[in-house]
Image (cartoon, rainbow, N blue to C red; front, side, top):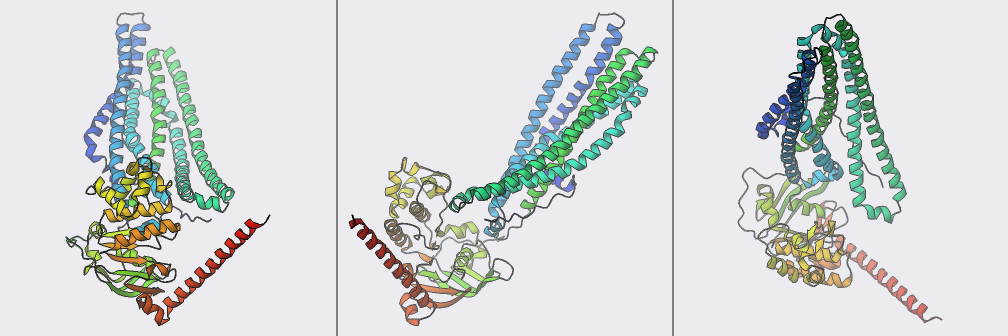
Length: 612
């Protein structure tokens, strides 16, 4: 099994003002809460800066001269600053977390709404796991930027400026000596920024690969086990996982190197203060309290620098994530509703293809100048070899794609002039591979359509012969359906699909690729009987591989290499002796040969049973 995962384009810059402005658009509705958070952050910084100053006053004004009167008030003020800082930090964090979650809720909702508008063709080109990564991991990265990054960077900068201003005010010589290590800090930060940016890019890229691989292989686990591919796929996953581990370790190595480096430079700055400030204190140039205050300010000065490095990391991740998210939001909607859709109060069920040319890629034509008309209430079958274009006709009628040339019309109106929801409301689809959602049986028949009552669900199920097996399930119509209907048989899912189609009362029913081809004879009889009931009085287009199932169609269209090469009833096409007749004879011989093999196997079994 080979899975092609196209490489993601990595973000070219660590900061993109255009992306950031677009991201902040989702924060704008909550700007009042952001303003409150900024004020709280300023007050938090002020409370943090007050502590060392109060220590200096306590030492110089009370402890050193031995005047203990009033020292209690200084201690109380110090404790009050700590408590206030804690409370203000808690409030600010809570407010910004609320803003971040609400903004990401809005973005995630908009992204999912856009995904629903994209055509089916888009999903044939994109790994589902990668799209899941966009809606989950990438949006979480943006949430980190909003809750910790934007306001947090502002708070760190305010704290740095405040510390430098206070230190210069208290003693500019000692302040300059303390800041002598700052060039080394800047060099270390720039080095860390380059390494962290590349490391984080690699982590995100490899995580997207893992998600895409997992999604595909969990959905195709049956095929993996059937062909005994467990060991090979485990090895491939292990390679992807090791690549992700290596990228993560590289990112952690950058952090592991940067933080001790900042800590060492912080210690060096404290050593400078102790040495230079101690000498000046002995000489009477400065007070002991000032030296102690400088030591505390120096220690606090390097905390925002470490925070800014982490904020840069968050910014880098957010820029990469936002570029991918907005690229997805900017994905053009290839099949969209017209600005002024044609109102369609009722549908007669007439279908017409006029000189339709269609290709999935460039001019690799799947349909070539296809023209036909289906009258209201008529049942038409599409037959032909695999790849002849049968399913493409259904896709164009449902408007999953638009033709490059020609027109597809329903009741004489080009489907591109309809609102897609109005068009598909009148079309019912019964496919071989039925998709069921997690929920209940009733939910899967109703599909959220409020107008379909419980009685209507039961009537639809009874009409298509689904009621007996549904009522035997624990909970009946409220029985839980697991993901993709894993606990139901193929035939049961087909009957539910028929009940779903009937409950929505479409005027046109489309039956794809032998909805009965994977079930036993008894269930096939039930489904065929239900199909006849559902199709009665409705326009129907049936795509069939087994020609024996379309003999009673009003008209049969035979496709070959994207063109309609024959048209007529079953008897007329057989009499013509063309492609349809050859296909029919081929299938008849295969069925006859299969019957002989089954008979021989049965005779052998009977003969073996009679031996001693």
